[in-house]
Image (cartoon, rainbow, N blue to C red):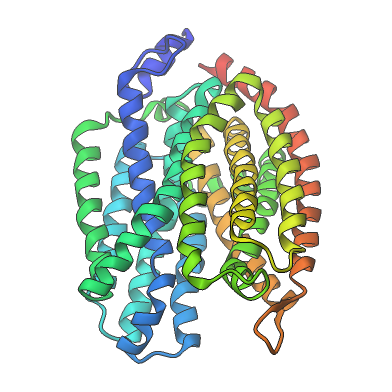
Length: 424
Protein backbone atom coordinates (compact mmCIF):
# COMPACT_ATOMS: atom_id res chain seq x y z
CA UNK A 1 0.00 0.00 0.00
CA UNK A 2 1.47 3.35 -0.90
CA UNK A 3 1.74 6.30 1.43
CA UNK A 4 -0.94 8.43 -0.23
CA UNK A 5 -3.54 5.72 0.29
CA UNK A 6 -2.48 5.31 3.87
CA UNK A 7 -2.89 8.99 4.66
CA UNK A 8 -6.17 9.04 2.83
CA UNK A 9 -7.41 6.45 5.33
CA UNK A 10 -6.43 8.75 8.18
CA UNK A 11 -8.87 11.62 8.11
CA UNK A 12 -10.06 11.16 4.57
CA UNK A 13 -7.48 13.37 2.88
CA UNK A 14 -4.77 12.29 0.47
CA UNK A 15 -1.21 13.33 1.08
CA UNK A 16 0.05 15.60 -1.69
CA UNK A 17 3.07 17.10 0.02
CA UNK A 18 1.08 19.94 1.51
CA UNK A 19 -1.61 20.47 4.12
CA UNK A 20 -5.13 20.24 2.70
CA UNK A 21 -7.99 22.69 3.46
CA UNK A 22 -9.74 20.01 5.52
CA UNK A 23 -6.62 19.45 7.60
CA UNK A 24 -6.24 23.19 8.18
CA UNK A 25 -9.77 23.36 9.57
CA UNK A 26 -9.11 20.34 11.80
CA UNK A 27 -5.99 22.05 13.17
CA UNK A 28 -8.03 25.18 13.97
CA UNK A 29 -10.66 23.06 15.76
CA UNK A 30 -8.04 21.17 17.79
CA UNK A 31 -6.29 24.42 18.73
CA UNK A 32 -9.58 25.91 19.92
CA UNK A 33 -10.39 22.82 22.01
CA UNK A 34 -6.94 23.05 23.57
CA UNK A 35 -7.61 26.73 24.25
CA UNK A 36 -10.73 25.91 26.29
CA UNK A 37 -8.97 23.16 28.28
CA UNK A 38 -5.93 25.32 29.06
CA UNK A 39 -8.11 28.30 29.93
CA UNK A 40 -10.10 26.17 32.39
CA UNK A 41 -6.83 25.16 34.07
CA UNK A 42 -5.25 28.64 34.10
CA UNK A 43 -8.26 30.78 35.00
CA UNK A 44 -8.69 29.35 38.49
CA UNK A 45 -5.54 30.89 40.01
CA UNK A 46 -6.43 34.52 39.13
CA UNK A 47 -9.90 33.92 40.58
CA UNK A 48 -8.45 33.11 44.01
CA UNK A 49 -8.83 36.61 45.42
CA UNK A 50 -12.57 36.52 44.66
CA UNK A 51 -13.28 32.83 45.15
CA UNK A 52 -11.68 32.33 48.59
CA UNK A 53 -13.82 34.88 50.46
CA UNK A 54 -16.90 33.86 48.48
CA UNK A 55 -16.60 30.21 49.57
CA UNK A 56 -14.91 31.04 52.89
CA UNK A 57 -11.92 28.80 52.21
CA UNK A 58 -8.31 29.11 53.37
CA UNK A 59 -5.25 29.50 51.11
CA UNK A 60 -4.31 25.90 51.90
CA UNK A 61 -7.73 24.69 50.77
CA UNK A 62 -7.49 26.81 47.64
CA UNK A 63 -4.08 25.27 46.93
CA UNK A 64 -5.61 21.81 47.14
CA UNK A 65 -8.33 22.88 44.68
CA UNK A 66 -5.64 23.94 42.22
CA UNK A 67 -3.40 20.89 42.67
CA UNK A 68 -6.19 18.26 42.57
CA UNK A 69 -6.60 18.97 38.85
CA UNK A 70 -3.00 18.05 37.98
CA UNK A 71 -3.04 15.02 40.27
CA UNK A 72 -6.27 13.59 38.86
CA UNK A 73 -5.14 14.41 35.29
CA UNK A 74 -1.89 12.53 35.80
CA UNK A 75 -3.60 9.45 37.22
CA UNK A 76 -6.34 9.38 34.57
CA UNK A 77 -3.74 9.56 31.79
CA UNK A 78 -2.15 6.33 33.01
CA UNK A 79 -5.56 4.65 33.39
CA UNK A 80 -6.66 5.77 29.91
CA UNK A 81 -3.44 4.60 28.24
CA UNK A 82 -4.52 0.96 28.12
CA UNK A 83 -7.67 1.86 26.16
CA UNK A 84 -6.36 4.80 24.13
CA UNK A 85 -5.68 2.81 20.91
CA UNK A 86 -8.82 0.67 20.89
CA UNK A 87 -11.26 3.32 19.65
CA UNK A 88 -11.76 5.84 16.89
CA UNK A 89 -9.79 8.86 18.14
CA UNK A 90 -12.63 11.22 17.21
CA UNK A 91 -15.03 9.30 19.49
CA UNK A 92 -12.43 9.17 22.24
CA UNK A 93 -11.87 12.92 21.99
CA UNK A 94 -15.60 13.62 22.17
CA UNK A 95 -16.05 11.30 25.17
CA UNK A 96 -13.38 13.03 27.23
CA UNK A 97 -14.37 16.49 26.03
CA UNK A 98 -17.98 15.95 27.11
CA UNK A 99 -16.66 14.84 30.50
CA UNK A 100 -14.48 17.95 30.65
CA UNK A 101 -17.49 20.19 29.89
CA UNK A 102 -19.52 18.40 32.56
CA UNK A 103 -16.72 18.93 35.11
CA UNK A 104 -16.48 22.61 34.21
CA UNK A 105 -20.25 22.92 34.64
CA UNK A 106 -19.91 21.43 38.11
CA UNK A 107 -17.29 24.09 38.87
CA UNK A 108 -19.76 26.77 37.77
CA UNK A 109 -22.41 25.30 40.08
CA UNK A 110 -20.12 24.85 43.11
CA UNK A 111 -21.11 26.63 46.29
CA UNK A 112 -18.85 24.90 48.85
CA UNK A 113 -15.21 23.91 49.10
CA UNK A 114 -16.02 20.20 48.99
CA UNK A 115 -18.22 20.61 45.89
CA UNK A 116 -15.54 22.62 44.09
CA UNK A 117 -12.81 20.12 45.04
CA UNK A 118 -14.80 17.23 43.53
CA UNK A 119 -15.65 19.33 40.48
CA UNK A 120 -11.97 20.11 39.83
CA UNK A 121 -11.12 16.44 40.25
CA UNK A 122 -13.74 15.47 37.63
CA UNK A 123 -12.50 18.19 35.29
CA UNK A 124 -8.92 16.96 35.67
CA UNK A 125 -9.86 13.33 35.04
CA UNK A 126 -11.32 14.20 31.64
CA UNK A 127 -9.49 17.39 30.69
CA UNK A 128 -6.04 16.01 31.46
CA UNK A 129 -6.36 13.34 28.75
CA UNK A 130 -7.56 15.64 25.96
CA UNK A 131 -4.11 17.03 25.19
CA UNK A 132 -2.70 13.55 24.60
CA UNK A 133 -5.59 12.69 22.25
CA UNK A 134 -5.03 15.93 20.33
CA UNK A 135 -1.36 15.07 19.86
CA UNK A 136 -2.22 11.52 18.78
CA UNK A 137 -4.67 12.89 16.21
CA UNK A 138 -2.07 15.38 14.99
CA UNK A 139 0.44 12.57 14.55
CA UNK A 140 -2.13 10.45 12.69
CA UNK A 141 -3.26 13.19 10.34
CA UNK A 142 0.03 14.84 9.46
CA UNK A 143 3.30 13.62 8.06
CA UNK A 144 6.43 14.15 10.16
CA UNK A 145 7.56 16.85 7.73
CA UNK A 146 4.53 19.02 8.64
CA UNK A 147 4.19 18.37 12.36
CA UNK A 148 6.36 21.26 13.52
CA UNK A 149 4.13 23.72 11.66
CA UNK A 150 0.93 22.11 12.97
CA UNK A 151 2.13 21.86 16.58
CA UNK A 152 3.29 25.48 16.35
CA UNK A 153 -0.29 26.50 15.56
CA UNK A 154 -1.74 24.35 18.34
CA UNK A 155 0.84 25.81 20.73
CA UNK A 156 -0.75 29.25 20.26
CA UNK A 157 -3.68 28.03 22.37
CA UNK A 158 -1.48 28.55 25.44
CA UNK A 159 -0.75 32.16 24.47
CA UNK A 160 -4.36 32.86 23.49
CA UNK A 161 -5.62 31.67 26.87
CA UNK A 162 -3.16 34.03 28.53
CA UNK A 163 -3.87 37.21 26.56
CA UNK A 164 -7.52 36.68 25.60
CA UNK A 165 -9.19 34.17 27.89
CA UNK A 166 -7.88 35.13 31.32
CA UNK A 167 -8.48 38.91 31.01
CA UNK A 168 -11.99 38.28 29.68
CA UNK A 169 -12.62 35.76 32.46
CA UNK A 170 -11.54 38.29 35.07
CA UNK A 171 -13.72 40.94 33.45
CA UNK A 172 -16.72 38.60 33.69
CA UNK A 173 -15.88 37.92 37.32
CA UNK A 174 -15.78 41.63 38.13
CA UNK A 175 -19.01 42.31 36.27
CA UNK A 176 -20.92 39.23 37.46
CA UNK A 177 -19.30 36.67 39.81
CA UNK A 178 -16.56 34.00 39.89
CA UNK A 179 -18.96 31.41 38.40
CA UNK A 180 -19.23 33.35 35.12
CA UNK A 181 -15.86 32.33 33.56
CA UNK A 182 -16.73 28.66 33.98
CA UNK A 183 -20.12 29.18 32.34
CA UNK A 184 -18.31 30.93 29.49
CA UNK A 185 -16.04 27.91 28.99
CA UNK A 186 -19.06 25.58 29.09
CA UNK A 187 -20.78 27.61 26.37
CA UNK A 188 -17.89 27.90 23.91
CA UNK A 189 -16.75 24.34 24.72
CA UNK A 190 -20.18 22.91 23.90
CA UNK A 191 -20.05 24.72 20.56
CA UNK A 192 -16.60 23.25 19.83
CA UNK A 193 -17.89 19.78 20.66
CA UNK A 194 -20.77 20.15 18.20
CA UNK A 195 -18.34 21.25 15.48
CA UNK A 196 -16.10 18.21 16.08
CA UNK A 197 -19.10 15.85 16.04
CA UNK A 198 -20.48 17.36 12.82
CA UNK A 199 -17.35 18.13 10.82
CA UNK A 200 -14.38 15.94 11.77
CA UNK A 201 -14.18 12.59 9.97
CA UNK A 202 -13.48 9.33 11.81
CA UNK A 203 -9.82 8.90 12.75
CA UNK A 204 -9.53 5.14 12.92
CA UNK A 205 -6.77 4.00 10.56
CA UNK A 206 -4.77 2.74 13.54
CA UNK A 207 -7.52 0.17 14.19
CA UNK A 208 -6.45 -1.66 11.02
CA UNK A 209 -3.23 -2.62 12.81
CA UNK A 210 -3.00 -5.34 15.43
CA UNK A 211 -4.24 -3.74 18.65
CA UNK A 212 -3.61 -5.32 22.04
CA UNK A 213 -7.02 -6.17 23.48
CA UNK A 214 -5.80 -6.38 27.08
CA UNK A 215 -5.63 -2.82 28.53
CA UNK A 216 -3.17 -3.60 31.31
CA UNK A 217 -0.86 -5.50 28.99
CA UNK A 218 -1.10 -2.72 26.41
CA UNK A 219 -0.06 -0.21 29.08
CA UNK A 220 2.82 -2.39 30.27
CA UNK A 221 4.09 -2.84 26.70
CA UNK A 222 4.13 0.93 26.33
CA UNK A 223 5.77 1.50 29.70
CA UNK A 224 8.55 -1.07 29.11
CA UNK A 225 9.54 -0.16 25.55
CA UNK A 226 13.13 1.09 25.76
CA UNK A 227 12.71 3.80 23.11
CA UNK A 228 9.49 5.00 24.74
CA UNK A 229 11.20 5.19 28.13
CA UNK A 230 13.84 7.50 26.68
CA UNK A 231 11.09 9.77 25.36
CA UNK A 232 9.22 9.71 28.69
CA UNK A 233 12.36 10.64 30.64
CA UNK A 234 13.03 13.52 28.25
CA UNK A 235 9.43 14.74 28.60
CA UNK A 236 9.72 14.67 32.39
CA UNK A 237 12.80 16.89 32.36
CA UNK A 238 11.28 19.24 29.78
CA UNK A 239 8.44 20.02 32.18
CA UNK A 240 10.70 21.20 34.99
CA UNK A 241 11.56 24.65 33.63
CA UNK A 242 8.12 26.17 33.30
CA UNK A 243 6.71 24.59 36.45
CA UNK A 244 9.68 25.76 38.51
CA UNK A 245 9.88 29.37 37.35
CA UNK A 246 6.37 30.41 36.33
CA UNK A 247 4.61 30.05 39.71
CA UNK A 248 7.04 32.59 41.16
CA UNK A 249 7.27 34.84 38.09
CA UNK A 250 4.91 37.59 39.20
CA UNK A 251 6.28 37.70 42.78
CA UNK A 252 9.87 37.91 41.49
CA UNK A 253 8.97 40.66 39.02
CA UNK A 254 7.24 42.80 41.66
CA UNK A 255 9.44 42.20 44.70
CA UNK A 256 12.89 41.63 43.19
CA UNK A 257 12.86 43.50 39.89
CA UNK A 258 10.57 46.18 41.40
CA UNK A 259 8.00 46.18 38.63
CA UNK A 260 4.76 47.97 39.49
CA UNK A 261 2.03 45.37 40.01
CA UNK A 262 -0.22 47.37 37.67
CA UNK A 263 2.30 46.76 34.86
CA UNK A 264 2.09 42.97 35.11
CA UNK A 265 -0.85 42.72 32.66
CA UNK A 266 1.24 44.60 30.08
CA UNK A 267 4.09 42.12 30.51
CA UNK A 268 1.74 39.16 30.06
CA UNK A 269 0.08 40.82 27.07
CA UNK A 270 3.34 41.50 25.22
CA UNK A 271 4.71 38.05 26.05
CA UNK A 272 1.50 36.35 24.93
CA UNK A 273 1.27 38.29 21.67
CA UNK A 274 4.87 37.48 20.80
CA UNK A 275 4.27 33.79 21.58
CA UNK A 276 1.20 33.73 19.31
CA UNK A 277 3.31 35.10 16.48
CA UNK A 278 6.43 33.03 17.13
CA UNK A 279 4.68 29.66 17.60
CA UNK A 280 3.63 29.07 13.96
CA UNK A 281 6.86 30.68 12.73
CA UNK A 282 9.05 28.39 14.83
CA UNK A 283 6.97 25.42 13.73
CA UNK A 284 7.60 26.19 10.07
CA UNK A 285 11.30 26.73 10.73
CA UNK A 286 11.59 23.39 12.54
CA UNK A 287 10.07 21.62 9.50
CA UNK A 288 12.39 23.50 7.15
CA UNK A 289 15.78 23.34 8.87
CA UNK A 290 15.36 20.36 11.19
CA UNK A 291 13.56 19.88 14.47
CA UNK A 292 16.63 19.06 16.53
CA UNK A 293 18.42 22.16 15.22
CA UNK A 294 15.50 24.31 16.40
CA UNK A 295 15.51 22.48 19.74
CA UNK A 296 19.22 23.20 20.08
CA UNK A 297 18.66 26.88 19.30
CA UNK A 298 15.73 27.08 21.72
CA UNK A 299 17.69 25.39 24.50
CA UNK A 300 20.66 27.75 24.17
CA UNK A 301 18.39 30.79 24.09
CA UNK A 302 16.34 29.52 27.04
CA UNK A 303 19.36 28.76 29.20
CA UNK A 304 20.86 32.16 28.44
CA UNK A 305 17.66 34.03 29.29
CA UNK A 306 17.00 31.91 32.42
CA UNK A 307 20.43 32.88 33.75
CA UNK A 308 19.83 36.56 32.97
CA UNK A 309 16.27 36.51 34.33
CA UNK A 310 16.90 34.71 37.62
CA UNK A 311 19.92 36.85 38.57
CA UNK A 312 18.31 40.25 37.97
CA UNK A 313 17.84 42.95 40.56
CA UNK A 314 15.93 46.19 39.98
CA UNK A 315 15.13 46.25 36.25
CA UNK A 316 13.30 48.71 33.93
CA UNK A 317 9.91 47.61 32.64
CA UNK A 318 10.88 47.41 28.97
CA UNK A 319 13.96 45.32 29.80
CA UNK A 320 11.75 42.89 31.70
CA UNK A 321 9.41 42.70 28.70
CA UNK A 322 12.33 41.97 26.37
CA UNK A 323 13.68 39.27 28.69
CA UNK A 324 10.26 37.60 28.92
CA UNK A 325 9.73 37.69 25.16
CA UNK A 326 13.13 36.10 24.47
CA UNK A 327 12.68 33.56 27.26
CA UNK A 328 9.29 32.41 26.00
CA UNK A 329 10.60 32.33 22.42
CA UNK A 330 13.24 29.85 23.57
CA UNK A 331 10.71 27.83 25.54
CA UNK A 332 8.31 27.71 22.56
CA UNK A 333 11.12 26.60 20.23
CA UNK A 334 11.97 23.76 22.63
CA UNK A 335 8.39 22.62 23.19
CA UNK A 336 7.30 22.70 19.53
CA UNK A 337 10.38 20.98 18.14
CA UNK A 338 10.58 18.39 20.93
CA UNK A 339 6.88 17.52 20.58
CA UNK A 340 7.34 17.01 16.84
CA UNK A 341 10.43 14.84 17.39
CA UNK A 342 8.84 12.71 20.10
CA UNK A 343 5.68 12.24 18.00
CA UNK A 344 7.70 10.07 15.59
CA UNK A 345 8.75 7.58 18.28
CA UNK A 346 5.59 5.50 18.92
CA UNK A 347 4.21 3.05 16.38
CA UNK A 348 0.71 3.78 15.11
CA UNK A 349 -0.92 1.01 17.15
CA UNK A 350 0.63 2.37 20.37
CA UNK A 351 0.33 6.08 19.63
CA UNK A 352 -2.66 6.84 21.86
CA UNK A 353 -1.22 4.90 24.80
CA UNK A 354 2.18 6.57 24.38
CA UNK A 355 0.66 10.07 24.30
CA UNK A 356 -1.49 9.36 27.38
CA UNK A 357 1.47 8.16 29.43
CA UNK A 358 3.61 11.06 28.19
CA UNK A 359 0.92 13.56 29.18
CA UNK A 360 0.60 11.99 32.64
CA UNK A 361 4.34 12.09 33.18
CA UNK A 362 4.39 15.75 32.15
CA UNK A 363 1.62 16.59 34.62
CA UNK A 364 3.16 14.66 37.53
CA UNK A 365 6.74 15.80 36.91
CA UNK A 366 5.51 19.38 36.65
CA UNK A 367 3.80 19.04 40.01
CA UNK A 368 6.93 17.61 41.59
CA UNK A 369 9.01 20.40 40.05
CA UNK A 370 6.72 23.01 41.61
CA UNK A 371 7.01 21.26 44.95
CA UNK A 372 10.81 21.19 44.69
CA UNK A 373 10.89 24.86 43.74
CA UNK A 374 8.93 25.67 46.89
CA UNK A 375 11.68 24.09 49.00
CA UNK A 376 14.44 25.97 47.16
CA UNK A 377 12.92 29.47 47.22
CA UNK A 378 12.14 31.37 50.39
CA UNK A 379 10.76 34.81 51.13
CA UNK A 380 12.82 37.61 52.68
CA UNK A 381 11.26 39.98 55.26
CA UNK A 382 10.78 42.64 52.57
CA UNK A 383 8.83 40.22 50.36
CA UNK A 384 11.64 39.58 47.87
CA UNK A 385 12.50 36.01 46.91
CA UNK A 386 15.67 34.39 48.23
CA UNK A 387 17.57 31.72 46.26
CA UNK A 388 15.63 32.40 43.06
CA UNK A 389 18.90 32.20 41.13
CA UNK A 390 19.26 28.61 42.42
CA UNK A 391 16.11 27.74 40.47
CA UNK A 392 17.83 29.06 37.38
CA UNK A 393 20.83 26.78 37.96
CA UNK A 394 18.56 23.77 38.47
CA UNK A 395 16.50 24.57 35.35
CA UNK A 396 19.62 25.07 33.23
CA UNK A 397 21.16 21.87 34.57
CA UNK A 398 18.01 19.98 33.56
CA UNK A 399 18.13 21.71 30.15
CA UNK A 400 21.68 20.49 29.50
CA UNK A 401 20.69 16.92 30.35
CA UNK A 402 17.58 17.24 28.16
CA UNK A 403 19.71 18.47 25.27
CA UNK A 404 21.79 15.28 25.43
CA UNK A 405 18.72 13.07 25.80
CA UNK A 406 16.99 14.73 22.86
CA UNK A 407 20.03 13.94 20.72
CA UNK A 408 19.28 10.23 21.30
CA UNK A 409 15.63 10.84 20.39
CA UNK A 410 16.79 12.59 17.22
CA UNK A 411 18.82 9.51 16.24
CA UNK A 412 15.78 7.28 16.76
CA UNK A 413 13.42 9.36 14.65
CA UNK A 414 14.69 8.47 11.13
CA UNK A 415 14.43 4.77 11.95
CA UNK A 416 10.96 5.25 13.49
CA UNK A 417 9.74 7.10 10.41
CA UNK A 418 11.22 4.45 8.12
CA UNK A 419 9.41 1.69 10.03
CA UNK A 420 6.16 3.64 9.95
CA UNK A 421 6.37 4.08 6.17
CA UNK A 422 7.20 0.41 5.63
CA UNK A 423 4.22 -0.58 7.80
CA UNK A 424 1.97 1.72 5.76
